Image (tube, rainbow, N blue to C red; front, side, top):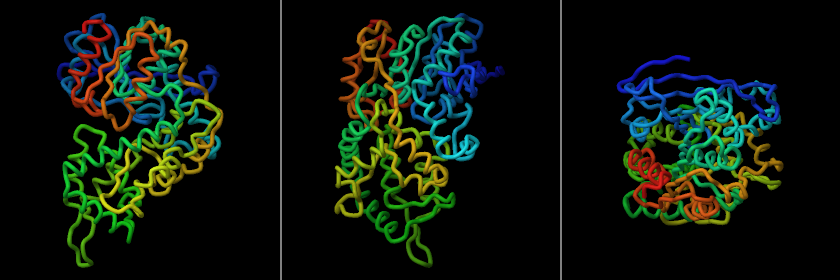
Length: 430
């Protein structure tokens, strides 16, 4: 355990050993990393704990360089905060193309990754909680997929929670992945239409880039193959508060003149790689649809299958403005991205799996006694608001704040205000 200081905050690194399979506590162990943060002036005080669960799946917790960033400064006014790298992410035991072959072949890798859903994450939290709090419950703050984990927490171990705060992360309790994507594609279409209304000049620019790629897909310096479909997936940016502006600035200077004619610039290619590569979060691509698996039905590349129900997203046959896509993982990702290419067969096995277990206990949620508040973003591109509100009605005592003031990243864009509002709701101050 190592402690160190940044301006106004004391940080402590924690490492924990937890079972890979919680059904076999004496079996193989993996490591979890978490960073504790406490305001310098309160470092020795007895403070309640706030556990932060990052969105994803597949992303480590935020790395803050100042307590003034996002929501952290507000949280440190009254909490000791734990920023957990969920299993397989950040500085916890990694799961990627370099480490997974240590498990064996694709079947062994897929079996291993079956332990990386919210049920295992919550059991991890319950193992480390007594070591930090002395057995006292803590408050959980779940962003996006972290909110999915918080709902699992309410289902499986509510005794570990003082309160649950959820931002953009109320999952469908019983919907299949197909239901999630059937709701998602129309939302994505609305975001794309709004982008082109804001930046009409991007209509021609996006089509010009797509036409260029259709003639000759580009292999980026990293080895990532930029196809038309991969270019379309830049629409994932549109779910953030400044995502439309980011996409516009990316498109506006895409081409440079060369002796062979106009070509996509090195600067454009570098930015595209940063936006699209899964090298830093491969677990996201591998288990993204698995977070919706709850019965004997395979997810079976749900986003790819459901996309065929929305032919307007086919850039090769659709005329007019290029249809960007959003948060979805497709088989071709495991062909174009070198960080995923060796894991294609593993992903296929996960997509075919038929023994997923339910993640949410609806009876227990209906009898919930833990104070819960959730920010639901009115036109969230990543998590369907209608699904979220249906879930909110299924959790006893949950209070919602439905707002169009923020996009899905409201906790980043408006952190102190969002956290203040949720804390007031769980304390019945509103």
